[in-house]
Amino acid sequence: MSPLRLGLVGVGKIARDQHVPSIEATSGITLTAAASRSATIEGAANFASLIDMLEGARIDAVALCTPPQVRHALALQALRAGKHVLLEKPPGATLSEMDDLVAAARDAGVTLFATWHSRFAPAVEPARDYLKDKRVLRAVITWKEDVRRWHPGQDWIWEPGGLGVFDPGINALSIATRILPKPFFLTGGTLETPENRQAPIAARLSFTDADGLDLFADFDWRQEGPQTWDIEVELSGGHGLKLSGGGKTLHIDGEKRIDAPDAEYRGIYRHFVDLVASGRSDVDVSPLRHVADAFMLGRRETVAAFHDETAAH
Amino acid sequence: MSPLRLGLVGVGKIARDQHVPSIEATSGITLTAAASRSATIEGAANFASLIDMLEGARIDAVALCTPPQVRHALALQALRAGKHVLLEKPPGATLSEMDDLVAAARDAGVTLFATWHSRFAPAVEPARDYLKDKRVLRAVITWKEDVRRWHPGQDWIWEPGGLGVFDPGINALSIATRILPKPFFLTGGTLETPENRQAPIAARLSFTDADGLDLFADFDWRQEGPQTWDIEVELSGGHGLKLSGGGKTLHIDGEKRIDAPDAEYRGIYRHFVDLVASGRSDVDVSPLRHVADAFMLGRRETVAAFHDETAAH
Image (cartoon, rainbow over all chains, first blue to last red; front, side, top):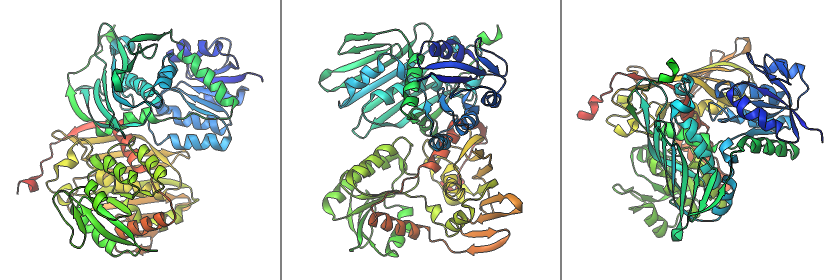
């Protein structure tokens, strides 16, 4: 089979750092074209817009790396043109907009893949396999990082739809929804929002499931020094596992089982090629649904103003 | 077939005002038992809790009229006991908790019905029939009422999960999702929250759909005098319809077609009997999903404190 010819839309940092090298490293897919108002990718046919790219390039699939607020219209255009579509996370600015993307993919007989890159961290699938059919008593998610380090001067993350601390937090939720054997749901929580911002800088969330799971998530964007991206899971009989480093390391009952470098985006493109080859879609909105639930049910507290001094330099 | 024997959980105002008389007026269903910590229903076998009722009464179905924050655990108990379940609106405090209710109903082979009472207003189905297969250009939802009049002294509606002005607004959304021919989604909006409360007192929301619909919703809980529950829909060629009075009245192209009294809860129980008889469930979370989207994507503005003087009397 000839490789899938891909057109990439939105040539920003995530496209250059992750998508382009991962596509190059994946067999069965090739970067044919790119669309961006301002940037180009060497070696690809470059266009100013998706519409121009759909008219001017011979492509089978489109990867959307644009901000979520404009993703729906672009995805619909590509799907209606009969292209397979890959969406960066989160798949949209709302949950409701996903319905007609799923319908459009089905109508066109193409693949729609809503990606969650953290699910492709090396320890995630082994953790899922280990927990399958087990009864989880308790789990703690600790996701604490320094927003100034990872999003210097990025004001859009504080605007409505930017999600604030849920921008990294949704990565944790994408792992938790993948590895925990039962669906869980929020019972209450607190969202801390700086007095000069729209989006939360921290969140503490309590979840349970049909069997009474005790799941606590602690998201904080104010952590300087070492960064923490851990999920600890407690089973009966003193057994348990710990995922750390955002899913790069797995300990089971205190023993290290996996400690591997990041290759998340290569995993994404490998899975995309497989989905297209087998005529399937993969659209799981559950991480975004948990975020929406938290915005709806969480108690709001106003905290000290956040100023990003890095933006001034 | 012998009538469905129903146990009602949560004997509050909505149960007495709407559920009990509507069950009595509907053939094929009979009120057998009730569960409440503090209240009883004459003529029914009364229990202190759902568990006691499940043990002590011979019932086929359970109607849950308790607050949404505790609905999930009760629904799961009833479904696992093999009972058909009817949920007052909203079906839960989160979207995510609905998954295992749907699964439990399927596993037990029983009916789960997430009700939206406004959908049973007399003009809603005729409006849906009229709009089916039509291209809607524009729609405006105006849902303005006086919170002091409808929720005197009810503090829980201002707490997290109480939804604020979305408590009535979700009724409008339940009608709009039923009558508009295509799924729509939020593109932006503003939520006004009193400085001394957790939940919004007003919301202005913009939606669109895959064909570029222009839908605007204006929810306000500060309207004294005449109350407004209207949906106006504009089609091409100057055609259009107007639903008013919360779905009691329908005008098409300016001509009155329907003007009928409220019988929403009788419609709910008629539909529940039909669902059980045909072995189906009816769980549409789309109105609650729009609310969650609004909490996630809406811009927050703080407005004047809200004091309910009626509560002090």
